[in-house]
Amino acid sequence: MKIAIVNLGRIVSGDWRDPFAAGDSIVADGDRITEVGTASAAAVEAADVVIDAGGMTAIPGLIDSHVHVTFGDYTPRQRTVGFLESYLHGGVTTSISASEVHVPGRPSDPEGVKALALAAQRCFATYRPGGMKVIAGSVILEPGLTATDFKELAVKGVTLAKAGFGAVKTAYDYVPLVEDAKAAGLITTCHTGGSSIPGSGAITGDHLLAMHPHVSFHINGGPTAMPDADFERIIRESQIALQVCTAGNLRTTLLCARLAAQFEAFDRFIMGTDTPTGSGIMPLGMLYTIAHCSSLTDMAPELFICAASGSNARVYGLNSGYLVTGKAADIVLIDAPDGGTQATALAAIKNGDIAAIGGVVTAGVPRFVGRSRNTPATTRKARVVRSSVMQDFATASH
Ligand SMILES: [Zn+2]
Image 1 (cartoon, rainbow, N blue to C red):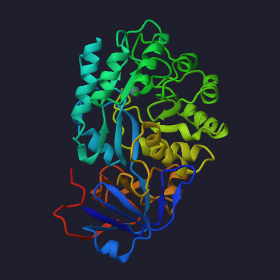
Image 2 (image 1 turned 60 degrees about the vertical axis):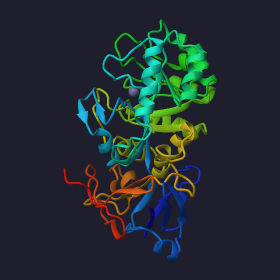
Image 3 (image 1 turned 30 degrees about the vertical axis):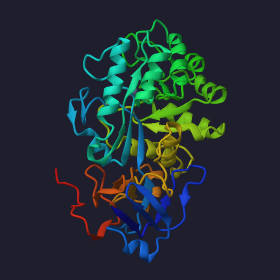
Image 4 (image 1 turned 90 degrees about the vertical axis):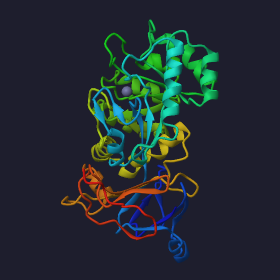
């Protein structure tokens, strides 16, 4: 399918160093973006679906880098079906598994955790709930896993490893496991802050600096924060990505954002929700964290949109997260919410309001155009002005 989105008021690129793209239109062919800027009449004419954005803002589909997926579109923790599809209506086009620890009776022996990660990876390899891409299969680091195990998983397609819920005696026992997982090419992640599972102990600055995983999961606390002094240490003494999560400590999220900007580490400031968890399912979690960071710091809203898209993509090596030719055609239309005080999506976010979503495209397919099931209505109206495909682009009314 070829699609053209025209009449955009603003385009956020996903690259925080250069956060705006010039122009008013985006063209995609199949699952890739082919043009960002000013589409020719011929390109619009050749499109199977033309969407008039009515002056809204386009942003890259959001990447939630901390989602507790299990199997299918179901969370045992909150006993909810269809949560991933619901997150898509909050602008999330890619979810990255924070490891499948919520699977009831999940195994803890090496063969068991390997099988769990591989099964999860395979189950989401082609399954897209509501159109969302899910990167699943994060092996839970448990004592007994060897360098050979990690190599085997990497060869078979698993890309992620998670420290924090294993049966280790101290968090320092993760150091050789993280080293072996990294050597096999896995992206390593580590729980940060007070324990979220009773008895698992706090993981703080000293542990992270000894392990040096690629990503400090919920560095702001999941949900309990580590000491304030450790934030500057992690930022200045490591290259660890700083993931802030919605279901954590908001004060330390803001502390981390300011320190990342101050010490020129914003490149590795990334965002996730850490849901579903005890905090619930949060379909608008990414939009809330973007609004909180934008309205409670003196930093620009587009920077946090980029932290929730392109910066996540770079850290995790994904071909999405940017509105740039050649990247995945994952596009979200946002606007000022109807009835608010602000005229544009970015002004509304800076004001502390969550953006209203007027359309979501994933893999080049419009999943809905018009009204999100979960956000307020948009001020402007996005609509399909021409279509030659058999699809109803309106939101299913349920
Ligand atoms: Zn988590």
